[in-house]
Length: 470
Image (cartoon, rainbow, N blue to C red; front, top):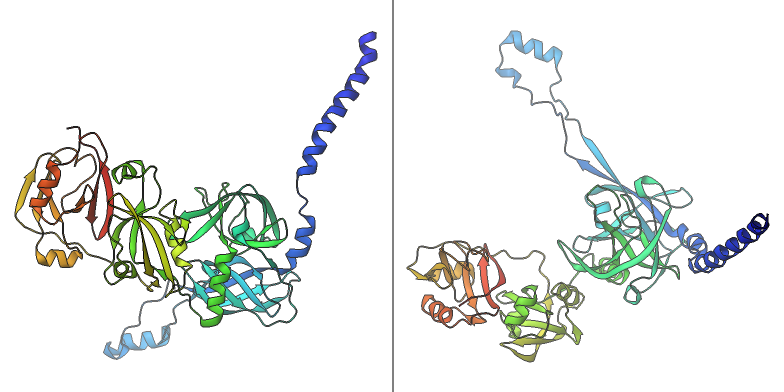
């Protein structure tokens, strides 16, 4: 009886305890309602039409004048003289947002690429035909213009002020469902993605799906801080990794597109690679950081400014370069003609050089490497047989030195992936100008520590490391 009397009291205490725990936690969750009510009217749905390759087109008609009369009469009665191939149109759906009351709209380049017609649908379901002002495939940003006055606009924030862990919200049209709202947090900043060298992406866990592309990413103040652009997926749908173009980058691009129809970016003219632990040790660094210069293009700003292969760039204009992927972002936002100060490590010593930034070419030049049949020499300590490069080969590979790998005979060459046809230009931070120098350097290589080697393969340069046991 006594236990039964206390059961309601115990239940009440448990309920009060749960309420005391749940209410503070619930109070910490943001209320997105005011943000959505304010911002949603400026978010638009974008439908673009592209010409698709024709399928099932009829084969060309034979020349009827060359046919016998009996067959000619049959074809003239039965078939048209000029059959028309069936032409198809493909459509893509995406999102965008209005940045000015007179009708300028930001979206992704891939939403409107190769479009023959672009239709923008506003929040009130009205539709407007849009003019493509310009696109920038390198940043995946496009600027559109519709005829309108006093259109609703978003408020623009500063993506540089975003912090990892901060709440963010997306509004878009996933799978054509207009003005869908999803929320999450900033997972990381400054992400580099394959083939996207000039955008330091914002990574979030906001649910993004096909149709969200080009839509805005908001902070809790209701300011646009990014353009939702890509997802990482193995299934075709959202898997917790979304990437947005920082609004600072997008506005820089859109302002240039509006002013001139094209985008100019800063350019150094180098190929860089990541500095891992072994490379850091071989170059005398305390920790892996910076961008290792694997190649310097002829007549580039880097070449004119004195940057050399093997230099490690640690900072640009006072901003640290923690990863090699940081460098293209930092250089790209500079204007051609700007002066840049680089803090580098060269041959184990820190120094500063000044370089005048150039303009990024429209297309990168490709370097071609060709094989040779030069005189071979063997060096068993590295397990390779190497040959001299002819003057013609040096010119075609755009290199002032190096030796050609003719055969891989053993270790460590086999383990580090050397192949016949590779060209070794630097070994242990020293220039290899021929087989004699190569043999001399290899005899002097230290045992038991990381050694760097610069290799040209199919026109691309990279540094690799290895260790010698003895």
